[in-house]
Amino acid sequence: MKKKDTERKQLIKKLKKNTGIKNGDDIYCVLNHVSSSGMSRRISFYVIKRNKYTKKHEPVCINHYICKILDYKRNDNDGGVIVSGCGMDMGFSVVYDLSSAIFPRTKRAGYALSSRWM
Image (cartoon, rainbow, N blue to C red; front, side):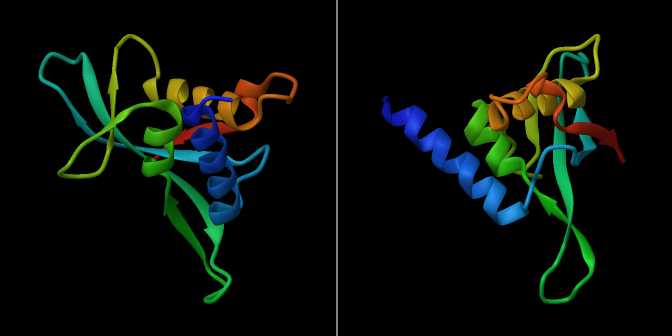
């Protein structure tokens, strides 16, 4: 197994452990910026999870995991995921790819997670 594949599997395990993300969860997308040409955008992604200490539901940013697992670049200023392309729902596209990577053995793996815009 390649080193990059091993690192990717470890990151997926860490994402699941730290956020409790599971099949059927919603991933919330926040649009930070759109380039003047409209060909790229910066999006932040969150999972809402219950904090075990405060017992309150809180957003957990998963931008770092998305960038590492899916090989996206991250903006230095706002930490958003830099997504190129236009003409479709780019938040859905990233969440679909993340879902496919996290749940590869699930039937219709890309749809195991849902994207929602805030």
